Every structure is written in structure tokens, then in C-alpha cells.
Image 1 (tube, rainbow, N blue to C red):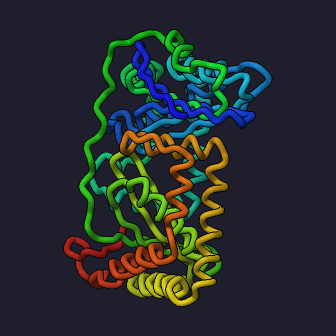
Image 2: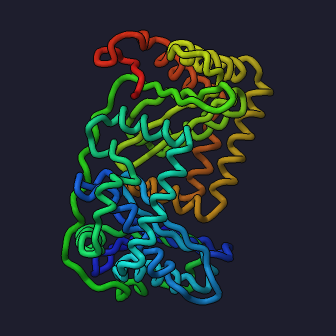
Length: 395
């Protein structure tokens, strides 16, 4: 059973009661990410996430808990998984951590060093470079092209007053949503949270504008060791509806199982992107050759789904089971619920998710693969000018 309530202090609370769960997942999302930053605050959302967690360790309470935090294009999320008897303590701890800016210079310097190490580690990862290049190319010049790790020069000069000002503007109650998933039957979470953080009449700051969607795919190539290379083709699109998201989830799982192609999707509020990655010989320099390889793989998967009923049923069933198993984890379920609420303000119950997945059959997945293959194979040659070609390589 879902409950949704906006507290007097402005915080929105969404809870889902799961009476048989021995643990509870608490997730607080603040509506700020790299797309919300200006040029002189580039990287502040991610830096603030670091220093808040370091300063408070997501609260200390009870018999212990597992906490985590991350920053995306348009949100910063803080999570705690705790015993169900400590649901209220977990919810209070996470709100106290993010609404009270207990930071000092030593913590700031320590986390700036940690972010430098994180940047070096990620930059050395060719698949992370693919993601960054695709984001820059798909949303060229817009806020969603900004890197989550930010501008090193801006971060190097960040002060405590700068971060406190950023926190005071973005971390207002009206810009915070608290999700509590698990056995909450003995608690009124919303009532208990009403006095946890001070009232603040400030409205939620405006979110970045909806990005323009390019109507052409972008290609990216990154060298790997051993004479290999990774090639990706990606496209921007509107955030999927719940039904489309479930169909896509099964489609990508079937595609991986049949071809080895890796699929990634980034959904950030009003923006979304999907890209397919293959690994091959570095001697293949032409993007058209890589695209042909991907299209052939898509058609191979489509054929398997359309011509062999037993194979198709087995592939789809395996994909459905893996997807449902993932949603059994409360942390994954809370993320799924938060995504749907953020995109279209719908509360997506696990039973509805299960029913939608059961309705997705082999032909629906095959149709999706066919449309994707057509959109890639009909794109003009990438050898044309990148300013005019509907299918261009990202620099």
C-alpha cells in the first residue's frame, strides 16, 4: 500500500508498506545534479554529496545500517538500508544528514582529494569515457551535457561559504522527496517526519529546461588494450513510460543474452539516452563497419525470437526472471519507484510491474529490435560532414 503526503515543512514523503520485509530501504532525493549547476558551480552537487556523507556518515543509530549516496544529472540520492524496527531512526538520520550542513574545511579538503582520485580512476575507464562523450554529443551545449564530476578548476577554488550557499539554495524541504520501502505498518512515517527538519517556506528551485532531442544516433569509439576497441552508438529520447520501460528492460536483457551487446540507459528526469556497446578489433576504423556489426546482431536476435518459439519463450522467461529478481532487492525497488515518481508522478506498485512484465512477449521484443536496427541501418554514412549528417561521430 502506497502513501504519499507533503509535510508542513515542505518535504514530500512516499512510502510503500511491505509487511513481510525484515529490512527497510530509506531513500532521500534532492532535486539537484550536474544539469542544475552554473559554470561557476560546476561539480558542486557531487562535492556536496561527498562532504555531507563524510561529515555525518548518514547518521549513527541503532544496531547498524548500510548507507550510500550518489549524484546524477538532476538528482542527488542518499540511501540507508536498516532493520525494520529502526525505520524511523533511519528516516530521521538521513533527513538530518542532508538538511544540516555540518561541514568543515578539513572535510572539504579531504573530499576534494577523494574526488581527484575518483576522476583519475574513471578517466582511465574507456567505458566511462564513452558515456561522457555521448552525453556531451547528445545534449550539445545544454545543461545535461555537463559532467557530474564537474570542472577541476572550479572545485579547486571552492570554499565552505560557496558550498553552504549552494546547500541553502538547493537543499530546501520543498526540493526533497523521502521514499520509505518496507515494513512500516507500526509507524506513521509522514507524521514522524513532520518535525525532523525545520520548516522553510522557500520553493523548490527551478529545474533545468527540457533538452532538445537530436533525431540522429551518435557514434563513439574508444581504444582498449590488446588491439581491441569499444564502439558505441547512442541516441537521446524522451523518458519512457512505465510500459515502455518494462519492454525495454526485457529487450536489453534478451539482446545481451543472444549477442553479447551491452546496453546502457540513462534516465534523468526529463532527459534520457540509450547506447549499445560492442567490442572488436581496433583495426576497424570506420564507424559504418561497427554499425553494420550491431545491426547484424540486432537482426540475429530478432530472427531467433520470431522463428524458434521454444528459444523465444526461454529467452523472454529468463529475462523476466532476472528483472523480477532485481526488483526483489529493496534498494532496487526504491530506485524503480523513485524513477517513476520523478518522471510522471505515478506510484508503481510491484504487482503492477509484475503484470506488465508478464504481458511483454517475444514479438513485442522482436518488433523493438527491428525498429532499432532500421533506425541505425538507414542512417546516412558517417563519412559525411558531422554538421549535416544524421549519424555522426562524437569527438
